[in-house]
Amino acid sequence: MHSLQFTAESSSNGIVERDFTVGDVPGVLWSPTSGGDHAPLVLMGHGGGNHKKHPAMSGRARRLVTGCGFHVAVIDAPGHGDRPRTAHDEAEIAELFRARAAGEPEGPIVVRYNAHLAERAVPEYLATLGALQELAEIGADGPVGYWGINMGTAIGIPFVAAEPRITAAVFGQHWPDVLARKAQQITIPIEFDLQWDDEHISRDEGLALFDAFASKEKSLHVNSGKHKELPRFEVDSAVRFFARHLGGNGEGAGLHLGF
Image 1 (cartoon, one colour):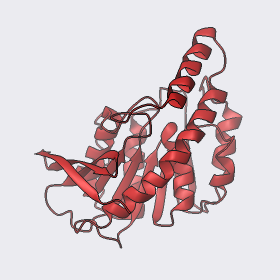
Image 2 (image 1 turned 30 degrees about the vertical axis):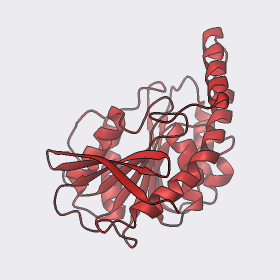
Image 3 (image 1 turned 135 degrees about the vertical axis):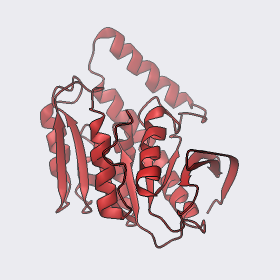
Image 4 (image 1 turned 135 degrees about the horizontal axis):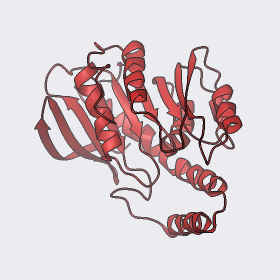
């Protein structure tokens, strides 16, 4: 197992931000400046074309750290952020841009490419979780959650299906094609986001993926709007969801920070 190596550290507004690597995979860990010993951990997955410190990631992390006292970590997906692209990555991205320019459906390309990324990323998330739990301030016994939308769902569903240490998860906005079978293996509490007017993912496709989860407790959050118009208040709900299932004080869950 690769050990975790911290490469940079900064602190502001009650949050410590530490860059790290696990093997050659770069990530970032946000923690409370105080009172975070053995606090719950939430792993997050970023969206396609983004990276570990995208404003959506840092904003959600800030809410979980300051509002609930959690630790939050994200790693760059293969071919994203600080990680080089392979020839396969470049070919798939070029094909996506070609289809977009031609007005052709993007879904088949995204589904195929995200499935490829998940095959590479799931072992990396497993290794990262193991390395993070070796840190004294996190430990191996605390609850762990996962939060990932879009590509974060494509990676997160097979990761959560393979990882019994995850006890609650937030997913959403992806096609069911290669994920429904993995979703059937997941029984933990789930919150799922769906955009009713998504121009890429049909309502039936979104509902099919939600329906596939075997969880006895699963909540579907449907909002009007297109693919990139997920309301910011869904972050409020996700923070409350994790506070309820992982512990923490949940303070700040009603704040609107715009992520």
